[in-house]
Length: 91
Image 1 (cartoon, rainbow, N blue to C red):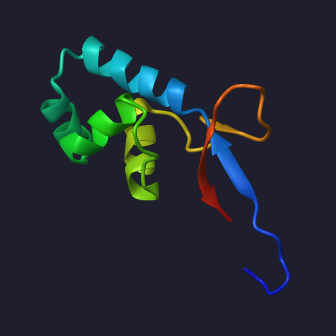
Image 2 (image 1 turned 30 degrees about the vertical axis):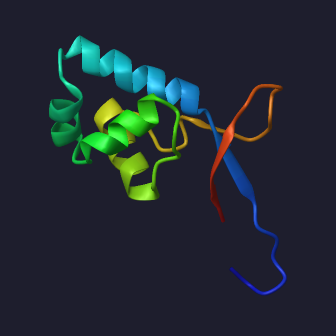
């Protein structure tokens, strides 16, 4: 980041991410542990995401998107729409 540039907050839809992780996990009939191993993340990471208790780290988010077969910007939103969003990163 260059001196004087403003940081941009990027919001993303945690609820949709959690729902799609759960849907795929159920579709494949995987436990949290098995899904986490398949994705390449810890069991506690997948549980926190599904329960909306934390925002995933960038690497975890990348692996989740790869597992869900979507681009990393799929869950990002540019503006708040009147419901609770969580910020992911500032760039």
